[in-house]
Length: 331
Image (cartoon, rainbow, N blue to C red; front, top):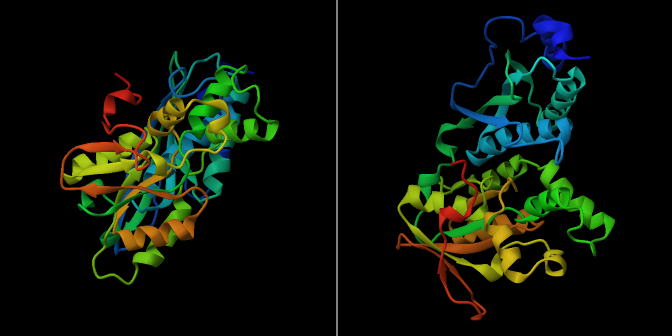
């Protein structure tokens, strides 16, 4: 069955099944927020052939990744998700089953964080396109901004980097990583298809920082790569950084399937790992890493300089400057 067979109203009736009945149906969704908190809003657009394809993700995981990308942006601001709206553009010949699977994937991710789909829009388009707007709330004095970082603070990555890029490579080139076990192969593919937004980290650093008079943390997510996140935060805060390549949290399996330089490149520039990159005082950073575990690591320190250096505490490799032009750019 195709979308053209059921029409716009028929498609809307299907999509409304994924939304709370008491919220959808009017011209706007009304979501209550607390008076002492700010509303955090983020929008992410995904285009078939650019952000997803049946070759690498399929509709279910494309939906999951679409939801995860938005929730990750909320986590990067310290915000708790409230709801999302979804604008969907499909061709008349798009299979209804594809659309339903996409929404099932979105819903599966969102339900883990108690976040409903509260509306959206449907239009005709020659290319399948999805635009999701997510709404969250954050206490006004606990908003995580890129511009909050200070020289001397430690830099934390909340988990391993490069796994999503490896998973993508396995999907595009099945002959890659022939010596991987089925468990390792599945784990890397899942890292790409089914990323987890790090909303679970928020309660941990609220606990750590809760007693401080001044909120001391800066950050963003690493959806565009670990190097990108570090550089963006440094630029916004007017500082520099020294990153130790020996401290980067890279999947252990990389040593069996990649050269040292390729593993480093995927960890820094691979993107779509959806971890958080945080700048905060050293003592708090160490405590945060200990409490999070599972690949979390202090990867460097912020400096007074505006340069971002990749250093090597083992003394084997020369220092180099990290730049944005090696990561993914749309244009």
